[in-house]
Amino acid sequence: MTEYDIQAPSRVCAATGRELNPGDRFFAVLAEDAGKLVRTDYAADAWPGPPAGAVAFWAGKVPVAGQKPRKPVVNDDLLLDCFDRLKGTADADGLNFRYVAALLLMRRKRFKFEDAARDEAGRDVLIVKDSRGGAVHHVTDPRLSDEQIVAVQSEVFRVLGWE
Image (cartoon, rainbow, N blue to C red; front, side):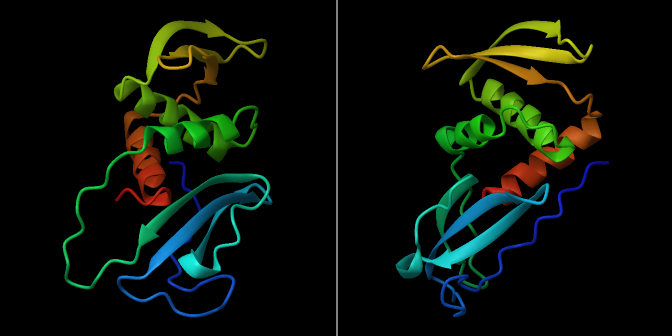
C-alpha cells in the first residue's frame, strides 16, 4: 500500500518556534522536499506567505481539546490547486495524490470524465475536463486498488486538514 511520510501538525510555529495553542489561527504549507511531501505550520501572525514551489497552503485553527471538530468543508479550489501543482510529476506519491484528487474533483462535479486513453509509455490515462474553466487534463492512472484509493484519499484529507 502507498504510504505518505507526512508528519502530523507540529503545533509549533516554524518561523518563531513558539507553541500553537488551542484556538490559535495558523497557516500550513505542503511542499515537496527530496521527493517527499512535507508539512510546515506557522502562527498566523508569523506567516511569511507560501514559499516558492509549495504544493498547497491553507489556514486553520488549532482545535480545543474535547471539542468535537465540525465537519470540514471541502475546498474545491484548494484541491484543484494541489492537482495542478503536481502536473508532470513522476514521483509515485505525487501521481497517486494527483489521481485521487482528480477522482475527488469528479465526485464533486468540478471535473467531468471525457475519455480514457493510453500514453506513450502504455499507461492508462483519464481525460477529464474542468466544468468551470474548460481546461482538459490528462491524469495517469497509477492502478491503485480500492483499498489504496481509500488510503490515499484519507491522506489527501489529512494533509489538507479536512479530517
